[in-house]
Image (cartoon, rainbow, N blue to C red; front, side):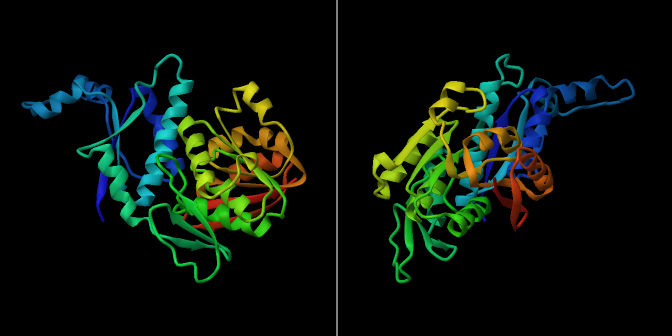
Amino acid sequence: MEWTEVNIYTATEGIELICSKLEDIGIKGFSIRDAEDFKEFLDNKYGRWDYIDDDLMGLSECETCITIYLPANEQGQETLTAVRSMLSEMKAADTEGKYGRLEAELASLREEDWANNWKQYFKPFTIGERLAIKPSWEEYDNSEDRVVLEIDPASSFGTGAHHTTRLCLELIEKNLAKGSKVLDLGCGSGILSIGAILLGAENAVAVDIEQNAAETALENAEKNRISPDKYKTFYGDITTDEKLADEIDGKYDMITANIVADVLIAMKDHFRRYIKDGGILIVSGIIEERLDEVVDAILSAGFKDPEISLREGWAAVKFTL
């Protein structure tokens, strides 16, 4: 398998927080270069050093960087998108700039090459009993007469390859009532809400903190011949933007949120605000180690009957109100 090096630039103060957030995305291994650590090493009064290589001396002036390696396939593309979305959220909240520039750069690889290379691995596949997912550039022989969802994720999370997306779509298929009104929070490519409409939902509202994600979701809805009156997109952070929170206000039969544990916990009261009595909430993006924490938080907001689905260290949970 080919791997791509991704360098995340931050400041010393951002290391612990970013590493924690990377673990929530499912990244377990990373290396860190930090000038402050090396300065402490040089200042150690117990050290006795006759010679220090010039390359090591250069660390005293380096920009703090966390390095990760991602597979050069659709799973890696999904993960890179999640990393960049996480950094964008941090940058928006870091008004004092204490966490540095919060950018991810690919080492020795043009963005255009990465964006095209991973596509060779993204082929049509089936999910659950009824759905088939196909990229816009591939043909699909629908001999099983499935509901075909055509997706072009662009730079947004959601090809269906990630376990969290698959788990969500399986739960949507299992629990969606025909004619439902759906709210997709953290929509990415729009795959969950578009899938819901194709499976029988009446309409959907899709929201993401990234403008390009909201635009991509709308484009994907058009690719699937969903009329504009049935699919609306918004971008922004409903936890801090009350105007946006009011704009999408209403009561929904189903809410989906495939994000990360900390954001799901922060949004628990918003889930309650937007869901109808008896409605269904489906959350995912949760590493198994944080499952109990997320479930407890959402139960505390008044939800009940958690139904947990697990796959290779990831969890999705269905609740009712």
